[in-house]
Length: 349
Ligand SMILES: Cc1cc2nc3c(=O)[nH]c(=O)nc-3n(C[C@H](O)[C@H](O)[C@H](O)COP(=O)(O)OP(=O)(O)OC[C@H]3O[C@@H](n4cnc5c(N)ncnc54)[C@H](O)[C@@H]3O)c2cc1C
Ligand SMILES: NC(=O)c1ccc[n+]([C@@H]2O[C@H](COP(=O)([O-])OP(=O)(O)OC[C@H]3O[C@@H](n4cnc5c(N)ncnc54)[C@H](OP(=O)(O)O)[C@@H]3O)[C@@H](O)[C@H]2O)c1
Image 1 (cartoon, protein in one colour):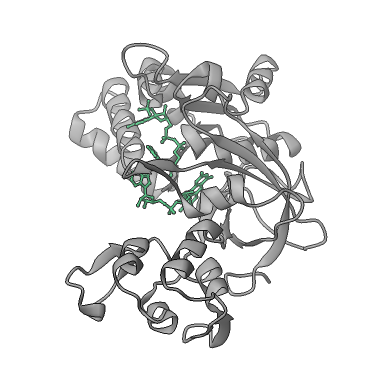
Image 2: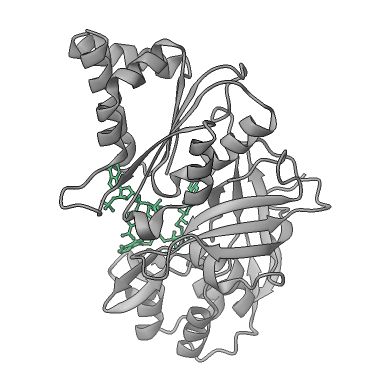
């Protein structure tokens, strides 16, 4: 089957902004065409994408080295030969470069463009010290039962300023802006998740906590539960910056809420003076959450690993402590036990 070394070359069927043009961020919905590929996946899985580096940056490197880009590069890792240009576009991490006293440079890590500005290594020497371009992972945001020929993704376009200049994340920029809809091949493969999946008992209640792009796998979960007519209750906690501009799949969630298919709690952090996050909504609903936990609910957390996941975990402990009449130590042990029993499941990055 398809893998990192043998990816499927898919096309983007559709790409649209989920955020309003006036938003402070850009997040896209993508539909990847997998018709005829026999790609198999489960909800909860991700796909690995092998991105292409920004062509402009590659041309800058080639120019600064006074090279043509056509020099032959033999890659020790793949045992294949590439043109210098193709090696830089598809194989190399051209962000930062780590090296050991090569080119008489003291520092061991430097942006590549800065390095080639001051030193002019031969393309083959340069390629020897470049790290490989790594795949990027994106949660699958659709169920095969609803979209058999497509894989949906929810991708935040990573943008930031470096020395006053706009820079973008390699993988997210490739998917969100660089790749052309219906024409640029997107090398993909399925990265199975061996734990982040729906409960085997369709009547188990599920609590889905997914701020930002963390909502992606939960769109797949809900589609699957609807398609299989699973009778278990579904509760979603979603958060983003502003409701008017960043409510990803807002109409879909509101419609399902109206039909009584999901319970929905929303935390728009920047719509008021004080920050409001998903864990604040959870604490507001602590009685009901404790009730669901006692009824055997599974709790899924997806999104930011740095802060959100830890804060949500702390909120869960607080809820168990307050509603379960346990001291803090027992509440901590209770949560640990839920994790061991795989009733708290994480997919954070
Ligand atoms: C299992 C899994 C599932 C995932 N699912 C999704 C998903 O559904 N949707 C999604 O959007 N992402 C998802 N991700 C994250 C995704 O894989 C990428 O990490 C993300 O898109 C960023 O990659 P990039 O190549 O665009 O950025 P990169 O090129 O990797 O750039 C990121 C780097 O840019 C620099 N940087 C970033 N911001 C700043 C800043 N403000 N200032 C200075 N430097 C900065 C940092 O050096 C950082 O390491 C998932 C990750 C995993 C592991
Ligand atoms: N470039 C950046 O500046 C930046 C910043 C964050 C994340 N990222 C990266 O961008 C990618 C996509 O991020 P994303 O779009 O999914 O969303 P996100 O930036 O993680 O934000 C989603 C929501 O979570 C809120 N949030 C912030 N801290 C939180 C916490 N401790 N607990 C709970 N919620 C919290 C945010 O509020 P506020 O933003 O209002 O605080 C926002 O409302 C990820 O890979 C992430 O690592 C980039």
